[in-house]
Length: 137
Image (tube, rainbow, N blue to C red; front, side, top):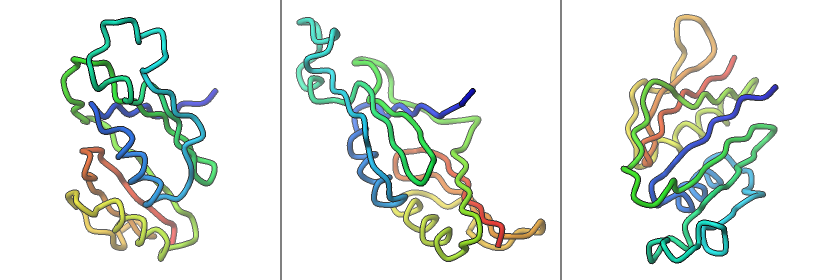
């Protein structure tokens, strides 16, 4: 069994995936657009043919899925969860990743040593996605 996050971006998924490639490294091995799909049936709004119907993001053994969502849906509102990123044994890489994800977003808990050890920080990135970044050093 595998549980994976699926993020919806309401129209800027491709931009978000580029941001995550820059921050996390990795690649987007799957990217399907609405154009040419069964949803491209004459009722698809203009401008949605190039939107992302489904994508996967993979980096260092981790994976999440993403989409622009369905045309006409309200913008996403992320609440009640965080993307949790653990970078074992590399505090400098964890700090760089935290800082990259925080660019243009909002830091809730600065990346620093918490009382339980290691390093920890919380942020909401520029796309509204909440993140927790940890390392054991």
